[in-house]
Image 1 (spheres, rainbow, N blue to C red):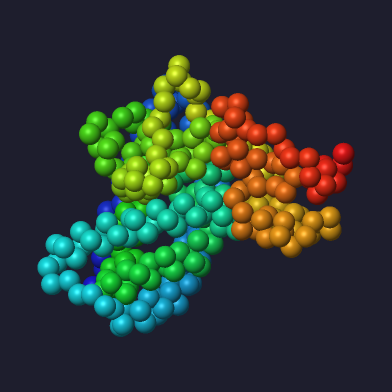
Image 2 (cartoon, rainbow, N blue to C red):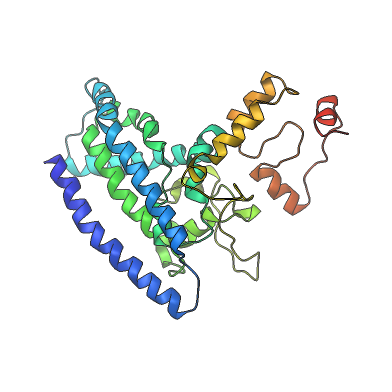
Length: 314
């Protein structure tokens, strides 16, 4: 029964994906917009397949772990509508924190960075997966199992809401009226993928935008006349040559270089692994918050401390 639900979900969503991708290609070509490239689309598909393979191989293990906690659950739901409504709501809430920590802790950003490395915004970018996320994503959903939600239902709802998460990767849809106040929309998600300083680490939700508004990570898409045209991709070029290996591991390589330095101590090395992306002990790089301060002209000057001076070669 549970396997059948997922098969039906795949059978329904796959032709829809093909149709909307085809329409987006036709419309973008008609409008002379370079929304797609062969290389970028191939990388998107490659990362999707790599993520799917890891998820499939590891699914048995994380379902066993979730089932252990489910067997010790502390709540029960007697009404089926309440059960499914609460599961969607709470799972989206926990995903918000998973996504937020993927952006705010460099160790997890090294996994998630692949999803943001495209300089395009189209439906296939939704398939540009964080390859190794299935190895730890289930940890965030353990509270759901403890609350009485079946592990199979948890996995099903995640798959179902991800369909919406793929549909919001487009430039074809501008605004969605009153839905902008409740759901993550293409407009919200364009902001999330932007590398403009004001837009960095904003709009972390996958299905509902309410969490971003509650926890201070919401940013509306602004007209180009009011701020800047959106730029997609990373704030710095990750590699000179993008290969199937470097597209996945380039940030891990950068972390290794940072912690291999001999002129810094363990505190600084800890910061390079568990601090926010862009953190540096000498101010030679900037976090997203520092980039916003720099853009606004409020970034404080680097303190002249001995470690910073030595590291900067002054």
